[in-house]
Length: 402
Image (tube, rainbow, N blue to C red):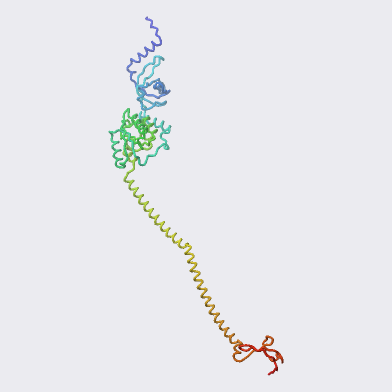
């Protein structure tokens, strides 16, 4: 019996590897299982993991040139379907699965990638409403990032030309699907920002499949939109289509045509609005002028009443009226008193002794006292006899009594 050769460990592992590599059944296998112990080797870009089911596990590796085609990031606990080959890592003498392709078991790869990126960017605040910039009301220049051959750019041009033709349009033609589309879209957005080339950007394309719209789900596009200091309107696909670009943009439009309508006002509506404002302002001004004229007339009337000359004239007129009343009253009183005085004078005149003297009577005085009786006179008294036109002094020679 021939003695088997003594092999080195390397020879043994090499032999086992050759045996496994020569088995066509192991050169192209599909394996279903759950990812565990996942490691993303950032320096090399390779993915290392274990694939397990309820009873067993196998080491697996997916090199960078293969995992670059993935639309999603593998995670622990994710159920996947793998395509690859089984071979041996000679250094450790360990057989493992070399993965060429990986698909989620259940949700599609694109749907999973969409949710993964959406959750990642949301956690970093790229979707926060308070980060959204307002869209300018009447932009002077609008930048459009889209394909220059698709229907979207023609819809945008037609709508803006009709609604607000005084706005300038700057088209940045880019690919909107394919492997280079996301990079071109992001570069166009950054270029507009670097030169302040627009007041608002419309980024989008017409409808298509999920794969056709995928460029607008790339992180590079989302970062460019978020970093843009120019407000961005996302207009990707149809109304039911949603992309990551829609969530990051400052405003989402359901279609490119709708984006154009949101970007500019309708000049006809604005003219009607301005005309209405003009008429309202005119009516307001005229009403204000009429009101101020009424106030002025009232103030002039008040000033007329408050004019010192008017007050003086009114007082003078009042004094004249009162003076006339006083004059009338005094004249009436004088007339009454004059009548009374005349009556008194008549009575006095009737009692005036001079009147009696005119008829030949005289008044005898003794010691300046009128004598009313002969008994007051004695013989030899000196008396003064007053006549109408003078007086005489006499001496009493004799007294006669009746």
